[in-house]
Image (cartoon, rainbow, N blue to C red; front, side):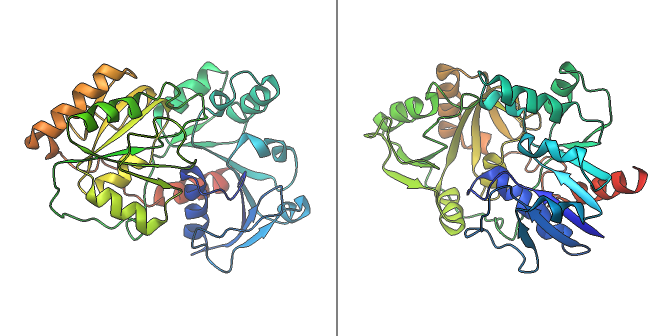
Length: 320
């Protein structure tokens, strides 16, 4: 079978990594084409060499199955091929809340007649709020443990990692509560490591180390060195960073309003509402009480490496 998977870009980003990982996995059984509306190449991810990247919609029409991964390409649902699946990682209108045209594209994406494979229960519930009446399969999210090997090295109990320090996305940490909590922890003598897709601009005097778009090797290194991770955002259907950190025994203090249903307080993280004092309190509990860092481990389904994504996509293709 010839499968086409859309991607909005090839930027080094967690959501894009998942799309490319799915492409690699499907390539084990099928011919795979990646469609990006703008001509592009991928330089940071080890994409299977046999996967072609195309920007011409005529190439999409030649495929047997189309997997649409973003509202950017929802218009393709009106074109060949007949068999289509939607892969949804987020309620993407929240990224641009004042853009009515973008909201219309997102609503078309959420309410499509085609099967939706989504990474979390929150997406499924929100899709229904927006009027979805067709099948939605919650398939979870996974990571590739070849890229993020499990490690059990001893921690120094003094290092705090902050993920996504710089924020331009209104669904994420727009109030910079994680950097502010990190500032208080540094004043108490903890070492602060931070990484982001953007250069350091806010609270510049706080991080001891700051990494912009770190390589896979660097990510593994800083996850391994970190005692805990701070992760704050208003909305996330299924954030990858806490799962990646788990492979190194690094537990997350998580602040979030909606989403991340499989991050459970006192099971695999300390979780609170998106509020600075609550995040600081949970961070201090983790740093001061080593028994809290001995957690249950991966929730069921977190290390599927997208087997569920593949099976659900093929099932949707066969049943139509």
